[in-house]
Image (cartoon, rainbow, N blue to C red; front, top):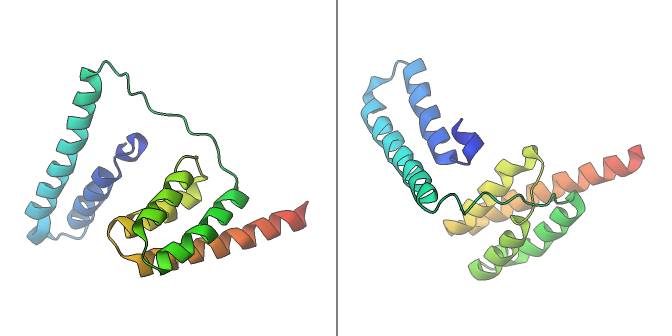
Length: 146
């Protein structure tokens, strides 16, 4: 359910707890539960703030993006990642994230954004390049099918 409300950090922390339980690994359990509790606290605080405002900050419905646009934006992004330019990279990522994308690309886009936020530009550049290549192949295949 956490993924349904955009609480990916809660979902990730819960998955780590679940994995520890399945693997009978009680050693890390206390730390994992502390992490899960912290992430839940952040989400619940956000829900409380939302409710205090009367729900006025309703979730935006983003317009759907098309894959050609995403590919172009990734090509535009890559030189900024290569030159380690966070401001320019964030601007382009902001444009990319102003659209909704197919589910199969969301994790890659999230990882690219996190790479920029963590100043891990080489990893973000590699991920952007891989996604751009995959999109180019997908676009080409779709064109051949038409």
